[in-house]
Length: 539
Image (cartoon, rainbow, N blue to C red):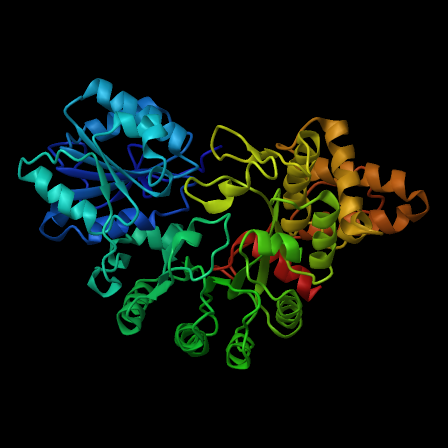
């Protein structure tokens, strides 16, 4: 993955910085680190650990890196600070590079104490090389357990137990991490926040199925933390709660927090992201949501599957008709950006079943459909279906499904390509007018035909530039609809230039006054993709 360009303000010596920077001189007792998927993603987990280190707080720093950086460079920067203890957050997207890093650090400085934590190392610990290399592994919640271990290590004690089961502390006992966000984080990165933890539902593809319920943070304390973040200039908030809308009174207080600030300063844009339970949208919540201006809300809504038999099989409780009504209401009466999830490869779901669900979702017109491929998360109960439904997962992260009883390997490969092309064509928001030509007469089958053609023509799923993709779309659509060339050309040209295209397309006959490149100045808090969909709604 290509790393984003970082300024010297954002990065020092290749390291994303939180805490007291030592200019690589002297000694830092405790380094908390991870490899983020992108620079824009600030690790909430590391900030929880540092916020709850008590008297060790000032003896610690956060050093964040990005996957794709050279292991040697990361090791050099970490070792230059001469840490005694290194806490490393391990996730499905960074476990391979993290394992290489741990191996190199241990080869260079065997006495460095390395403590692992995170969902990827919370289950199947004995099977993982990275766990064998490290000194300690904290499974589950690490907020207070890391502090307890670090305190022992700083006093010279070395616990004999390598695998430590994390203590689930009462949420009111935790120090909230939001003061650990730096000014650079607030200016440049996504700020992750949570009003609750856990999930009461038991969907077997998800690690949250192992939770007993959802636990709320003290609301007054949380809102005070949000107030401080907002006062410091934060305008993008991504809530990681699994069930934001489950407790309506709590949801309304948080929505009111943002509404008050929007109403007090209408020109000071903000953007808040929430994950919603699809079949729970009572009238009080609708009334609040309807008050938000366009470009200020995004809802991530997990449908996953519309097949009732598959839903029951994976312990997913969902009232499909209510979920559809709620999506329809949101699209019609609210101005929120709707990002809706489907999962391909669930046990017992056939291609026909998935296609029917996809078409059903397209008819509801969400802004984005996240076409996900089932993954085997370590510890997730979905594994119990492996034998019955012949679920075969990749042995390598992210452990994607390769084939099932109902979907063979070639079909799932086609679906993977469909997902990628759907993201760059439909979800990108670049082709709102052109999309109707691609989805007729039935969305899934029609777009699958395009995906098959595009891969056969280019052999690529990545590095398809905007202008090149426009010409490929035209070649395909004109081949399918030779009598509609004029309409296809008109829509492609309009979409290309509305999305900031500056060149004259080869099939563009008339000169036109080209638009200015895409700008975020008008809605500074709104991400680019969401801004394109907002413009399409206005058009």
